Length: 370
Image 1 (cartoon, rainbow, N blue to C red):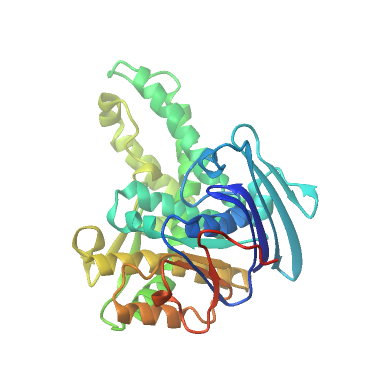
Image 2: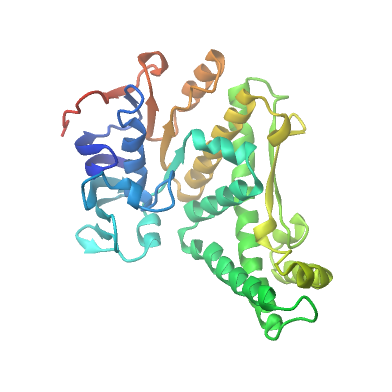
């Protein structure tokens, strides 16, 4: 897909901004604190109706305003989409595509795809397993928008089951637990299979992107999905019956521990995505440059998977990607972006501008270019 232009009003620190976005590589240049990342965030939000930086919309509305407004046009699947979004500080947001209301995010996401990479992605590599689970769920939503409710359905079942366990007395199973076991298994199997498919889809492309950055074939990033519900082999089986049986057996084996601890101990909420660089676990042993390269490579792997699935690349947005890389890796990353469709990058100074890029500057004031 390609974003043609975007208008921003009262979004983050931007009072008003209009920007035409050319095909290929666009670099947004400006000092820190002037709104480069906010502009990229706005472009991603316009395509996905979600921020890659915060979980609620309130911080997106400029201080003193009641709503933020985003408007832009994109080309995808041989069609044009005019997207208009009112992001409200409180209450339901309003979204229109080609002047018609949109009530479900996936109705837009199935047409427009955007992949956002930023410094916070370091948490995926160096942080707790919850960060990697969150990344996997984002991969699922990006690759298959129709599955975006899979994670939330499991979370609802998990909350209800945990509430029942907490209300127990630590002795025998509380009434109704068997029914919530079935709910947990059903939604857990669906989520485990979706995560396994997403991990499989991005694995080779992420490894290849990391090798390109490193410049050495022996520097390999290996991403392996580690489900709690059963062996990873069962998660990728064509039939869910094998995984369901493994999930049920593990749940039964931990029943006594769950009753004592009053919480669910088996299920996708305990999954992980194991990341290894040169055979060592990245979380504990990767250098800063390797961790930074791994974080970027995972996003590039997701972008490649989307392009392979759709037949056209998504909008790729990279926020300050070069700051954690040495000069040689910066050069390799910049060179690797050709052929990835439309790419938007934010950098703090001219030193990081890639050759042949279209430059947009964000300074004391921003002049509308459209």
